[in-house]
Length: 228
Image (cartoon, rainbow, N blue to C red; front, side, top):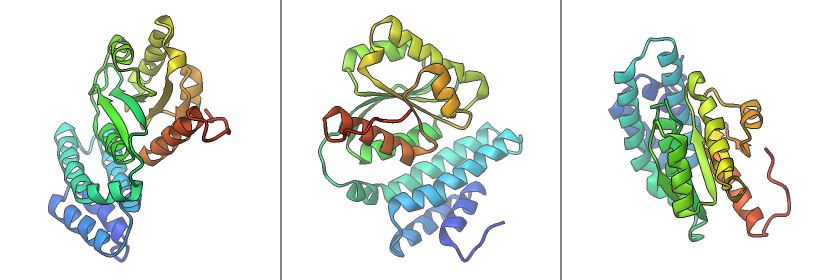
């Protein structure tokens, strides 16, 4: 049930209801009331997206509803885009990220949210899209020499694609040159350890935090080890 006295909860509920106009209006209202863009994203929009995912898993929503949810998220991200950038500050380009959804998986909403946040935080993104074979990741890593490879998986049946990418990078002697982070509903710390990823990110904000910590360490700004 929605608590209509909580504007971010209402953002979440209206998003899950696929109410485009109300979601965008509430997002603008939350900005006007002084909520940070990151808080709106984390406690409003992302929670709404999670509810959409749950409804999809229960077969109450289908592909058409996911497409509507993607359209709503795209509109909401445009509303908070400038605020996100101002909150991130102007620190110049932090690093390069190759990002893609693993082979066999066509989900993209969560990936696109993470990309928006990383871009707002100063990262140069190479978006490979969805259903990306491991060899395409390898080719892009060889071409652009990124600091980070980010892998998204939204289906239990495609999680093994994470391991395929990691192994492909190893075969081409590229694995040690990049920080591999993963995310998506079926992923976990255990999945990261099983397939040899460096970091598991619960959400897009954690992804930015993990990327920042790695880049600080790489540049000698942080002596703490980056946890798996």
